[in-house]
Image (cartoon, rainbow, N blue to C red; front, side):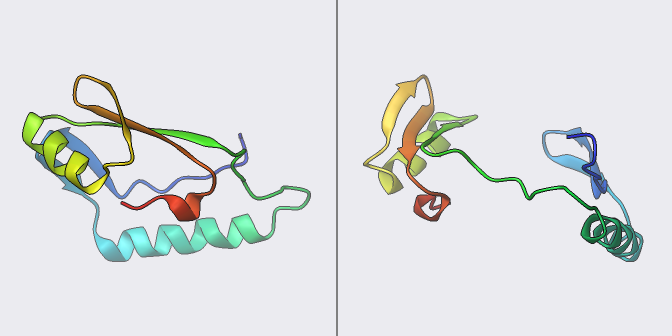
Length: 94
């Protein structure tokens, strides 16, 4: 999608570290990108094709176990991974 613009809000410097851009600068950049986006002609909004296969991979066993307790209807799809087929994004519960 070459017409998609992005705004960089932060740059990762490691697993627990990021260089964040100033909120005022980011807010101004987002405003400019939104103005350009609403003026694009002939472009349709992005939509998902259902069903969606959602898969989550966790860094640690503790994270995996906590997530599994909340998502008992999800399948275990590998080491520290959970998977579920979603019929709509409204079914996604973070």
